[in-house]
Every structure is written in structure tokens, then in C-alpha cells.
Image (cartoon, rainbow, N blue to C red):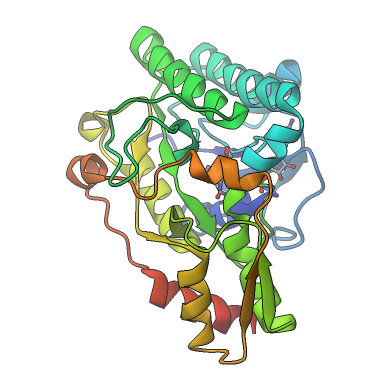
Length: 313
Ligand code: NAD
Ligand code: SER
């Protein structure tokens, strides 16, 4: 059996650090090459190989994939929703061209598997707000959402036309403590922990009753690896799977934190990110992922808050 060798693109980011560490634990340090445009994240130092690389440089990416005998790519480099609205052209360019470079090389080099994350941001104001289904009206209003929607169909195209085994999840907002978030609308749900511990107060940039689908990072890593390990015959969705575990508002997460830090207080000063959040569903239906490859989450709001505070302290 050929041993897989994995390249993680965007490995220094919020998901990349934890996913790289988890993959190294599974496949062995030398079998997982981390890469990023920025410097190696300190948490990755000494845990395995690292190359500095721009996914937009297709030639360099191709050379690295051949030189390192890569058979699987996890492509995480992107500009997220809030940063994307500040520079729509750049967000479109990176999010689209980066993915096309990866898919084209995967096809040419016959890579075994590709992973690329989509987002709840594919949905727009006309999608159902509650339990948003796998297949529904999808009319995104952010450049990030438009790029994810187009990306999902490029993945589907490369699978159908060339047989590239590309798999994808529509992550909810991800909450984690190891590496900082990269400019999303759901980042408030991470900032709140740091401010609660340091200042005992937090001003949310979303209104108190803004419900959004969220997930704790251990569940996101578990979902990613389980999807990638699943038998190809069980993967019925080649655009991207809805996955879900919890949904809460700034007020609700504040109340949960107050159970541990009674003096914690909150204010609300919505900014441009409120419009983005209002365009997304409040919860998603992930029954197709649960049926196809047995997805099950482990963390709800209560367990996530306890774990976050315990680790950040
Ligand atoms: P992040 O911004 O924390 O990390 C992205 C990484 O990509 C950064 O380290 C950045 O330096 C790197 N990068 C940027 N441009 C690059 C380039 N040209 N070449 C190589 N590397 C480059 O983002 P993240 O939160 O880790 O998200 C990873 C993926 O997951 C993205 O596709 C994102 O859309 C998706 N996603 C994230 C969330 C979330 O809540 N974090 C939710 C839904 C989907
Ligand atoms: N957490 C991401 C964002 O807010 C969702 O894709 O942009």
C-alpha cells in the first residue's frame, strides 16, 4: 500500500495549526508538510517539515507537490468574510485562483484526495434561517460567500469531469484557543473569552440576539478527518457538506461565561459585520453528513465554554 504524504496549505492559520498537529499525530510527523505564506506558527515549530509557499504561485506549488511526493492536499488558505468585505477583489482572487491551482495540479498529478473547506457563508438572506438544509436556495451576498459557492461547484466539476476525489465541509463559525482567528464575522465568539478573562467585560460587534451556527475546533478537526477517511462510495455530496453542533447568540454565550466569571459584563456595538451575520442562517441541518459518513458532534455550548476557559486560564 502506498503511504500518503500530505501538504497543508494555510497551515499557520486558525484551523491549519490544529489540523496539521492532528494529521501529524495520525500519519507521522514526516508525512505531513505544513506550508503558508506567513512564517511557521510557533506551535508547529519542531513538529514536522515546513515550507514557505504562496498558493497563488502555481509553478511553485506544482514543484513542491512533485518534489515532496505529495498525494493529499488540505487547502485552507483564504480570506474570510469580514476581511473580504474590505478588499473584495483580493478575496475573490485568492479564494478562487488558489483553489483552481490546487484542483488543476490534483488532476494533473492524480493526487489521491483534496480537502477544501466551504462555509455557512454560502447561504444568503433568501436561504431558510432555521435548520438550513443541505440543498436549498443559495444566494450569498458577501464576496466570501460568493467565492465559497463558486468554489463548491468547481470541486463538484473536478470530481465529475476528472475524478478528482475532492471533499468539503461547510464549517460554521469555529471557536478555538490555540491559534488566532483570521478575520471572520464569527470571531466575536473567540474574542469574548480573552476579554472575559483579562477585562471581565466585552463589547460585541454583533447584536445580542444574533444567532449563528458555531462549532468547537476539536469537533471541526474530527469532522474533517472523518470525512477524509470515509469510504469514497459513502460520499454523496461533492459540493460541500453542512455540518453543525451548536447555535447561540452573543447574549447566550455571555450568560454561559458568566456562570464561570460572575462579574463578567457585556455591551453591544454592532458594526458592518452585523449585515454579514444577518445574511446567514441561524442553524443548519446536517442530516446528510450524519447519514453518509456518520458525523456526530461532541461539544455543545456548555461543554465548549468550560473547555475554552479551562485552557485559556
Ligand atoms: P486563517 O485566516 O486563520 O488562515 C488562513 C491561512 O492561509 C493564514 O495562515 C494565511 O497566512 C494563509 N494564506 C493566505 N494567503 C495565502 C497564500 N496566498 N498562500 C499560502 N497561504 C496563504 O483562516 P482559517 O480560519 O484557518 O480558515 C481556513 C479555511 O477554513 C478557509 O478556507 C476558511 O474560509 C474556512 N473556514 C473557516 C471558518 C472559521 O470559523 N475559522 C469557518 C468556515 C470556513
Ligand atoms: N467564521 C467564518 C467567517 O466568519 C465563516 O466562514 O468568515
